[in-house]
Length: 113
Image (cartoon, rainbow, N blue to C red; front, top):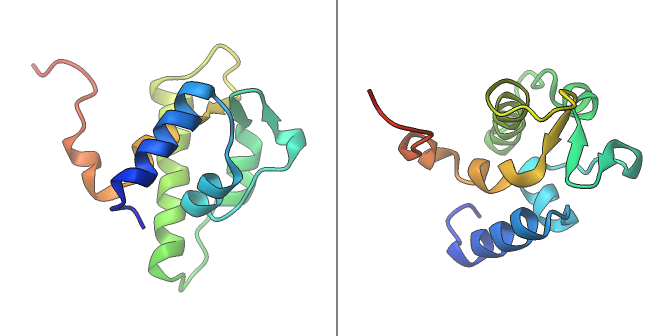
């Protein structure tokens, strides 16, 4: 799933540039879709993320754990590291960055000191 470069290109090209939430990709990466009233243009309300991914179920399979990890990282990126002015929404631009969890250690978020 996460190793298909074509899918990631489509995800980045559509979700990031056009700023729309594509149900297929969102569902594939997070396993759940936010209801329409939780989406505001390019972002999803933090409350939906917190209510949906607040606690990973005990005994969850590997894919469920990966989805919860993606959601948690999106919450960190969207609320702590790169928060928007509202402070209560998570922009969908972070979806491509959490698509391949195993590659996150190779990202460069800024200059190294």
